[in-house]
Length: 216
Image: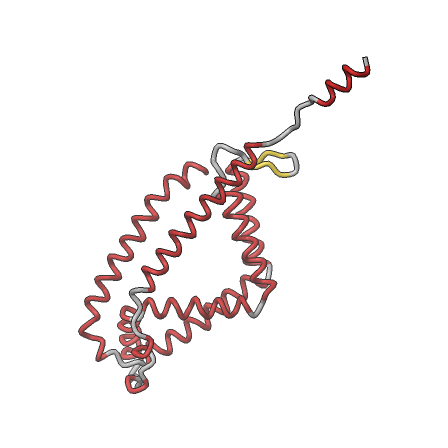
């Protein structure tokens, strides 16, 4: 009797959860593909930047004659140096976040929650936390509420806004005082390439919209 019970206990199957490991594998595969596309898009966008010595050419700086002149300069410089200006804004934001590690950690945690709990989670596998199953709508609502709390009720929001204001002030000052007369020949080409860039971005967003809408 005892030998039969011991043999039966030794043959008891061990529980496993292969679906959970498959879910994590799928999420990490999606994340790697996303990072690869993001890296390619970033390199492609940065390839359109203007030479930095041209941006910082001291001989091209002069005081604008009027407010309309400053506005015209800013508009033309923004069309020509748009990639450089975006890089400057990103640099200011990065430096601000690096100088506030807690805010950076909070923002990265929020981003990770969006990526792993919603964006890259398989749609056929519901989210289960603390024994409760959350639908896609509930997950989206919780993450949206968490985003509002982090951005508006913590120091992260004020840090992002202040860094953006500093970056925009730098861009506006450069655009108003940098004389764009030597950039006139390239302005039409710059505007054209910008148009195709925005069309490509809009097309990508439109292609991704149905997949996101199906989750809501």
